[in-house]
Image (tube, rainbow, N blue to C red):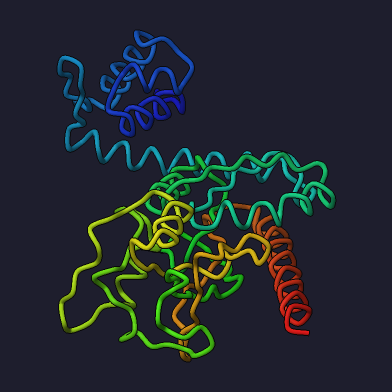
Length: 309
């Protein structure tokens, strides 16, 4: 009989493509994992893994079995959640969040969660969108916070807020700070972007696309902080989401310019599996996030008024 353990081992093996790393993730010995995978192959009656020295490749059947195993494991996790979770935002919750949100959202949200939901045991996973959606689908994560829309018919989403993009330029840039700019004001040849895989990179390229065919600067980074340092030192310009701007931490070497309406931006929200029984948890989490964002927005407005007085 096929067991959930065997499916879990195959799923891990499909992700890591390595018996040793899969065994480490599953907290078992490599021979034990290999034996269970072979037993699964016998039960199914087909070869699932093509074994090579130091490497493995899933057969066509193995890849499909692994994909279906992920769905079964996710449904099993949802079944356990249904039986265990009765109180809102209590117990463990695994939240994924993209890198262009995590450093700016979590410091605002975590204190409120700890105060209002002391029984919650939050585990955070920060990585790129594709990895988050894959791990959401296979049950490794309960919910993810990212830019909408999210691909997949089996995903439920909750829009939270719109995050406008601003143009960050060196402080001595001739563009005036008090005049709203247009897309033609962005010099793509000086545009610094995050590295491949970040959704913010794709959003920036989509907005700044022109018929001239100019290419962005040949620079990339893994974090917004690094990109902003490049701008501050005169290496180029970049699009920065408003949520990442802290009025108390602005760099005097950087000037932030707003775009004319309709302002470019992204829609931020939560996503979870439609089969998850924890929709009330995610809605409550969304309410906490939204309250934190609104409170921060009110503080920004007050600070701006005081500065102008």
